[in-house]
Length: 67
Image (cartoon, rainbow, N blue to C red; front, side, top):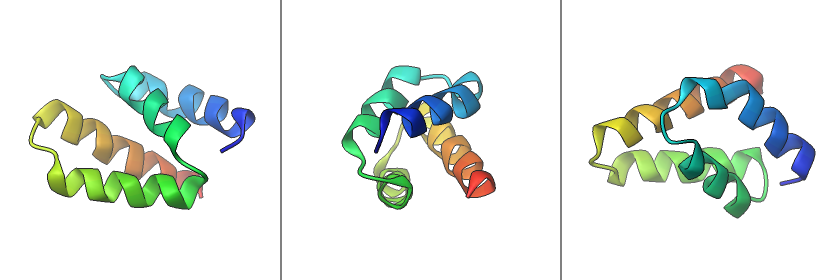
């Protein structure tokens, strides 16, 4: 994922989530928005921490509204 897209996503989604570092790391590992969505859906199934799960749902929701 290019730096401009990462920055735009951080600006658009960052204020709504608790763990911004988690989101930054995830963005660094993803190739594009589709890869990000796929990884988030996988994480949502595995995650047990309620705060992280909420962040994932917020990120997915925001990405769906952008694309």
